[in-house]
Image 1 (cartoon, rainbow, N blue to C red):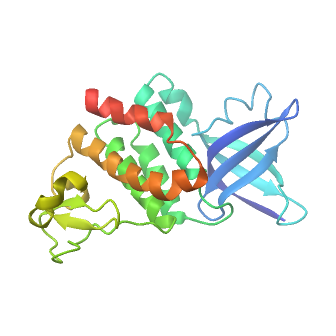
Image 2 (tube, rainbow, N blue to C red; image 1 turned 120 degrees about the horizontal axis):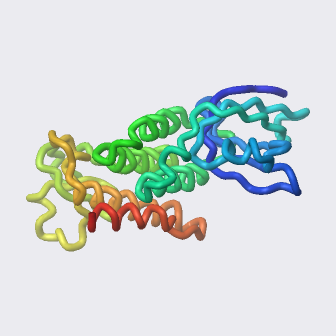
Length: 239
């Protein structure tokens, strides 16, 4: 068995004295693991970093084996953002959450969204909102997508302002006003409003996605909210 393609490194763990097992997200093969012989070498360690894009070739005798990877650098993203806490936290959040995807199950839309976020990682006015949309996409791919298109009570598509923390459905400001203290805020950039979102809007978007990630993904698996993600929210709210 053999295949090749580009992949985003999600995690790297040591195997023996000289090798490493890497987990990569590919467009056609989904999340896939493999052993890299010599992955702990001086030349391979800078390449095998979570957040870098690599070209991999996977080989195994049988399809269900762990298999062997050869990995060549495609885009060395981590080296360029190592001094930026928010950007490094963004990559850590993305790779940590993508590691929760089922193994060997393709999610091409999420893969493409990952590349889009990485393409804009040097622009702090753009990537945080893309991260919110990426997390909502992750929920959708896992079967827990939110319904933010119309009001759950009236069917209206305008004036959406809240989201039910139970159903994940949007509610207009008018319909939700009596229960606003129990509802989650829906920032305008997620409901079709024009204009760039504020940092507060993006933080609210992360709170919204985070509520449903905790409920449907983290808590059932006994996984803690990534600290890197919490750092992004604090950075957005405090500047």
